[in-house]
Amino acid sequence: MLCHVEPTTEPNAPAPQPAQVAYREYLPDAAVAHAALAAEIALAITYNGLNQAVMMVSPGNIEDFIRGFSLSNAIIASVDEIHDLRLTHFDQACQADVQISNRAFWALKEHRRQMAGTSGCGLCGVEALEQALPPLEILPPSTLPPAAHFDNIRQRIEQAQSLARSSGALHAALYFDATGEALLCREDIGRHNALDKLIGALHSDAVDARQGFVVVTSRCSLELIHKAVRARLGTLVSLSAPTALTVRWALKHRLNLIHVPHRNAPRIYSPVQEFSA
Image (cartoon, rainbow, N blue to C red):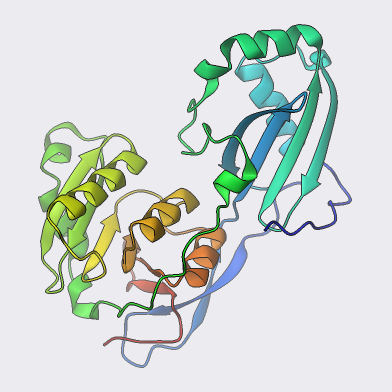
């Protein structure tokens, strides 16, 4: 259920300051600290009442984005073809209702199938906010991996990525078992594809995904949280910092979420109340 909030006083407001999110380093007696994480929201766009796309975007300058998106994707030939643009704000999302000219709307209906998935956000083929922010099962709590399992993990991931060593430009999703060994690795040019491949491999090999942990080498975006919860993973580890919204969803659904920075100790974003030495 989306919670409606009052719109900002400035419709095309700049992006808000990063949110402060709690975490703990994987160090003995580590205290809870806070880090500034980038914000993201689900933006749903309709043209003349027709659901077109939902994508994850940084909040702020939404009207500029919609105009640019409409132009750059040939939905309109000029900004003059946008007759009205109304934004409805929610706590995790924004609904944009755009009225365009009859000519532009007719052209949109002719080629809207070619529009789906033109961005790397992973949600551009989704047509309603309910699909971007779906109700998901609350997972049973899962034990955090021991801190020692993250020693030299970036080097071990590089060793497991056989395809990336020869070609580069590939994301990877890996499964580390309960002893901390890399058991499975799947690579793909699409970060969502890599995780999907790994989830499929876990099921094919009858691996209990709640034991051990899964690592993604890509940005940890909301749709990866969706996949992890639906696959009933216990712990998701990302080499790139999560956003504030992904932490919020991981906490809500009891998915362990850990970030492994380049030069610092791993950071536990979900849960922050427990510690596994």
